[in-house]
Image (cartoon, rainbow, N blue to C red; front, side, top):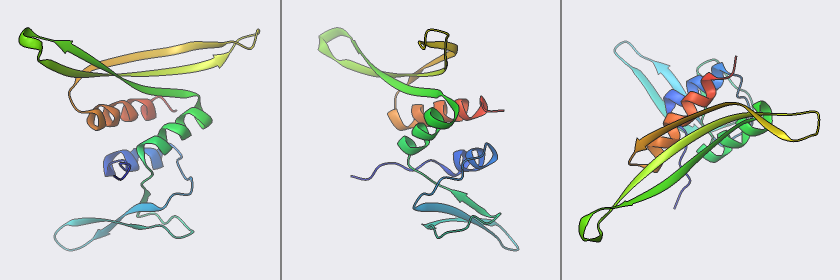
Length: 135
């Protein structure tokens, strides 16, 4: 089982917001006469203008926490229906923290999004919102 990489859309936004951490995968955009091609390959040392680093979702979450104090998590809710059937709903939460004068974490921002039925899709949606918090 492989850990999911961020999408190309998120990779472009992460680059715009300053993500330049070493990672093993990148998207390369090659322009041809008719279309734009995107290929994922192993990363070397320098980041060129047509490269978009593609870390795993969890590595991008770690970068958001460590560099920008933005915490992203996904909660799973099971909602039982008639005859014991279970519907799974995912709720994403973004929190930005700071340390107060007593060295306790205080949230300066919190946003919740719910209704997703796929964990990775919900995490992607929340990662985009979290990246958009970075000025």
